[in-house]
Amino acid sequence: MKILLIGACGRMGKAVAARSADCGVQIVCGVDPVSADLTFPLYASLDQVTEQIDGVIDFSSAKSLPSTLAFCKAHSLPVLLAATGYSDEDMKTIAQYARSVAIFKTGNLSIGVNLLQLLAKKAAAVLGDTFDTEIIERHHNRKKDAPSGTALMLAESVKEGRKAQSSFVYGRQGLVGERNASEIGIHAVRGGTIVGEHEVMFAGEDEIVTLSHSARSRSVFANGALRAIAWLKDKPAGLYDMFDLLGEIL
Image 1: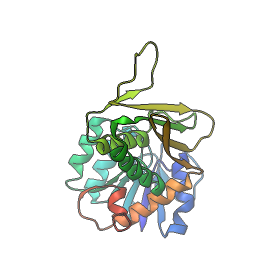
Image 2 (image 1 turned 120 degrees about the vertical axis):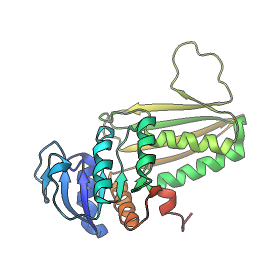
Image 3 (image 1 turned 135 degrees about the horizontal axis):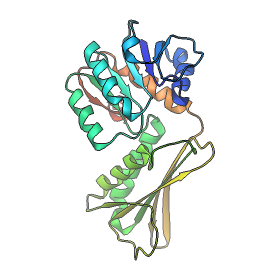
């Protein structure tokens, strides 16, 4: 499968390029405003791309979403959206384009994290609001958005599992009063070179249940991205996620 890699010079772009050959995927060209010495042609914008490609992986940023989607629609290409920081308005735009383009979008490309999401939902269903739920995510000091998309994904899973009124609380400061049972606390830690760590804590009366996942390298996400784009090939227009890919397993 021949792939156009957007955000080719970023950390994740380089990780995807490094793993592509082992996953049976060929990066035929990349797009990035930053110049770098790569093994494939690199362009500053999508307008310069002339190669024959089968799909697109976008690891750039949310601000490039309009141009990425327009390019994929114009060329009838499936696309994996792997950037972070998409707004509610961006999600509406993605849903609109999914009517005519096959789009893969997930909060985290790690298989382990998606398993964590399922476990968190099941735990919330069993424990209910008698256990206070707090989500802590840790990332490197260069990550620009907070909380992480994965933390929000986990919070939504807990909310679905509870099947009761829940509200998200982002950190706490000052005299906030007693904790409300409906709260799902979400906390972001930034420091050093932490690739990605997520913890879901259920704290009850005299007992604590903790579910966690730790990514030790970016190859975890690169492997997931390459597996996802290969799976997306020839899929009809629609919005897909990791649970669609893992359906046979889960």
